[in-house]
Length: 154
Ligand SMILES: CC(C)(COP(=O)(O)OP(=O)(O)OC[C@H]1O[C@@H](n2cnc3c(N)ncnc32)[C@H](O)[C@@H]1OP(=O)(O)O)[C@@H](O)C(=O)NCCC(=O)NCCS
Figure: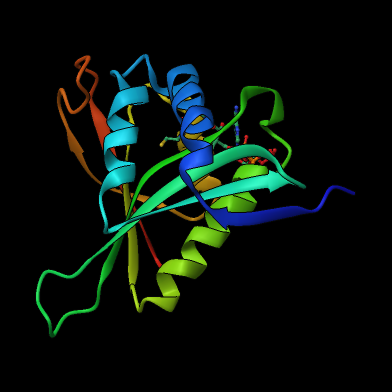
């Protein structure tokens, strides 16, 4: 059985993240560039899931705090698994790892946006106990609508 490992993304992962984003997110916008911009932001945590050293996917989360007296809310900015490696439980392992990071920072909830037409992502997040909490027309740079999903972490 393959065992996965997790590591915080480094400079060496930029090419992998950009290529994978182009592959799985370009329908929605120039995410190969957008994601690299997020990667540079200090509040964004980017994690690579790998088999040995071979990267299989990545995810990005921010941990926002609107007021000092309120718990943080985790915002999952992106999660992507290399197409040949999809549907093997790798996305679930990575999502659970990101939820664990969010809990460690005290986040009570995880939020994300995903496209209305992204059936695989909607099934994936539904399977992981996320529920729909909102929607936005023309959310993506290429004009697609999105759904907001949320999950309580405690
Ligand atoms: C969404 C994504 C991250 C899921 O990763 P994954 O490793 O393939 O997911 P898993 O194998 O852990 O799947 C867990 C469950 O999610 C659901 N699921 C995942 N992919 C699915 C698909 N293509 N069709 C239907 N259900 C799917 C199933 O319930 C699956 O359980 P099962 O295989 O036992 O039936 C991956 O498909 C991906 O990278 N997609 C492109 C990028 C993207 O859309 N990201 C999400 C928006 S940011």
